[in-house]
Length: 346
Image 1 (spheres, rainbow, N blue to C red):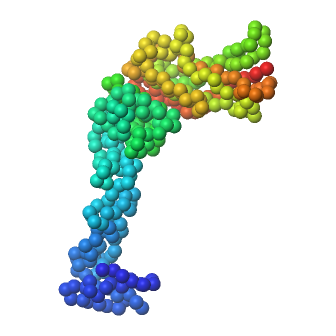
Image 2 (image 1 turned 90 degrees about the vertical axis):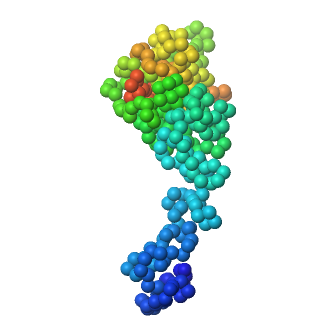
Image 3 (image 1 turned 45 degrees about the vertical axis):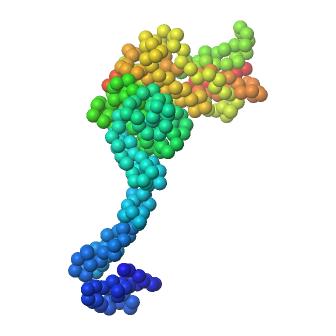
């Protein structure tokens, strides 16, 4: 019903019904007098609902635009292109874009993100498959075909039952909680907070010699925590800096569970989970249920000269502020970056 040229809008005279009522408003501007919104309706879905304001018909906007969807005039609906178009930021629903192009938001067990074969979408239960799928995304892996990475954003920092637009150790912890019978969100659990106390990480380096009294060929750096009474899960993040950082490599990233000071020393291997990403010096660990009374040892890295690197080499290993801990009540604490140790290779 609306047409025009230049800076002026012209209502087609054929649209003025039942009786055209024209009035000159400016050089080229005319309007059909309207009494109600119905007088302005053009019957099209994709240009919105026209309204009558002060006897003028006002044009509307594409109703799908603000939702990031595509307007489908033939079916008078807003179509989605992929799952990412449908994310509603509710951690208690799984959002998808099925074949009819209409967003579907279904209530699901918190943490249920993949099917039994790792396919995109919930299957009604949270198991190790979901834990592993979220872990892979935390470490930079891809989501199953069809899924959006935001389908795996099931918990916010510090165990809050909200989304934060990213997939981190908190999402992994949430999946572990749910897989082993203690879901933290969607009707079960709390909101989370930061507990009292200031945990700190301490780095303990041990040299490895080629022969007794000979040159240092590697360093084993153990990571310990102090100032925390009990731990249910943790993330350790390290970095290697210095002008010669590119001359060394991390050849092992592991946990020595034979150490008597290991925080999960009394936890059977089948009752805990660990994951390591050596390229980013990032590891995660958690008990499946409950927590461990505080000990100190967390994890270790082995650092060696890179092949062909000339010695002597000096680098610094340090902790980063991405190191995080949670306790039995699913409260969490972020550890400030700060502790460093200097490694020298002969």
